[in-house]
Amino acid sequence: MKTVIYNIPNISCGHCVHTITTEISDLDGVQSVQASADTKTAVIVFDAPATEEQIVSVLREINYAPAN
Image (cartoon, rainbow, N blue to C red; front, side, top):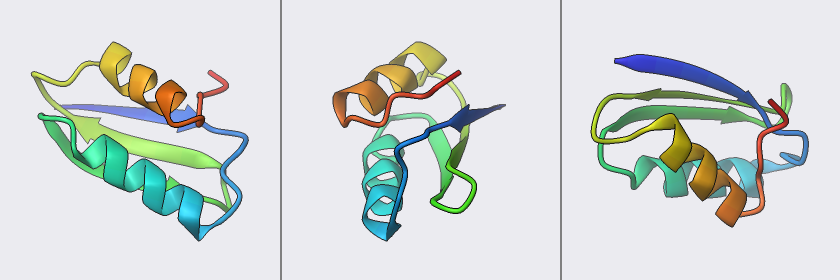
């Protein structure tokens, strides 16, 4: 199990949080997603077959590219 924290500057509201949570949760291997408009972060816990590259790719596709 791996945990990653991404800084996502353009999270601004509950809709953003919902979109990120829904899209990332759909990936096989993702255990949990906690996005926050207050801290502008997403904490994602995952295991194989999900990869960091896959998660970042989805975040970019939905216009929430991480700053880190």
